[in-house]
Amino acid sequence: MSWPPKADHTANPSNASLRILTPHGMAAIAVMELSGPGADHVMAALAGTIPQMVTLRSIKADEGVIDEVLIVPRGSDHFELHCHGGLLVVEKLVRRLAHLMNDEAITGRVLEDWRHPRRHLPEVETLWGVQMLARAHAHGLAKWAREQQRMLDAGGGCVEVKRQAQWLCTASAGLHRVMDGQTRIALIGPPNAGKSSLANFWLGHPMSVTSDVPGTTRDWVEQTVRVISGDLEIAARLTDTAGLRQTTDQLERLAMEGGIGTLAEMHVILLVMDITQISDPQHLQAEAWQWAIHHGLEDKLAAVPWIAVGTKCDLLAPSTVPVQSPRGPAVWASAQSGLGMAALQTQVLRVLAIPQMLCHPVIDTTQSERLNHLILGTSDAEVRAILDEISSADMGIF
Image (cartoon, rainbow, N blue to C red; front, side, top):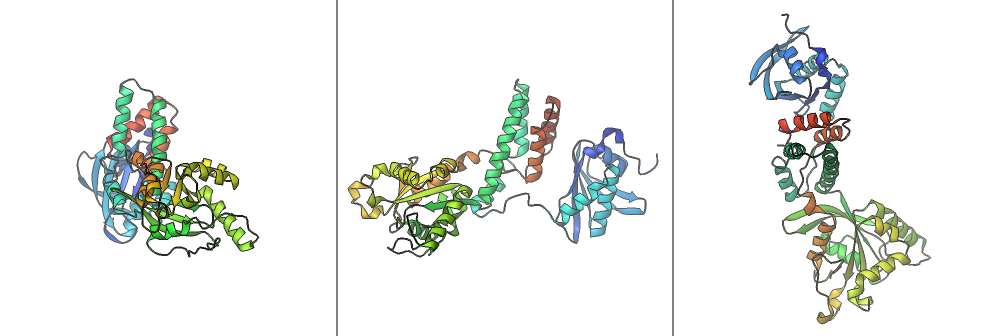
């Protein structure tokens, strides 16, 4: 047998995937991953055999020896290659693998991803986010795939597996957004309802100028705040908008229109009302909805989850302040005393469905791509094959 042996292209080795796991730059060691259908044939062509245990091989190309490479088998179609971290060594090894995979274009894609990597995981903003990533292995995609296999073995259908995969992709995208600190919350309501005071209290320092003069906030202002409830803590972007009212002031009108324009981009809307201006505090949500209808915002509130917030409750007689309900439709708060702020943050996390998200794994972009292939699978056999690939390889993040 000539060395290295030619790849068996009848096995369609180009279905395998290749990526570099270590960051771009000079290093002592670089690690790349070869996985997927046909990876074993590519490895046999590269190393002269399919390693069953950790093996050191001298890898050659037409121009001579590339490097001494440590090959670590992770599964029947899953291998890691550890080589010296010089940039030229890595590039030569990628080119050799691309040739054996019968897809020279792989070289450009792999090296481009290496030099300019996509961010596979969120940049967590809180300790809770770090803990979520730490749990990703135990609650990872491999575990999910094994659960789906058991469901199929019990007589379930692949249509249900695809539905679960679609839901998992959606839930994971939501978790990435939350952990990245990209959740957006808007404060809207009448002028002088206490929106800016509420925002300032939440932030812990002045975010907007406040006064008793309606129309003081002339533009929407955005800052990062912490939303905390028990052990959960996320970072979010809080937007304080100009109060809505009839006005002839051109700048104020433009500020109001700008605030309304941001509502479609929000994940939660807090409709803030001065509770001292409501005859019966128990009717806060109904009053807030009527105000929204009057200003033509009902479509906005129908599309984005919203919470009615009654401010200035410290000005009410204690006997008239309603009892907070942990799952109720409205929250009573005071920016002066802090009353109700904990309840408000709990409500925000609830409408964001954070507790439900925690039941599912955090998956990276590569894993999401595998799920999309599963969703688009044209046969039960293809769906089962992808589940086998995911479950046999430890695709947890850590």
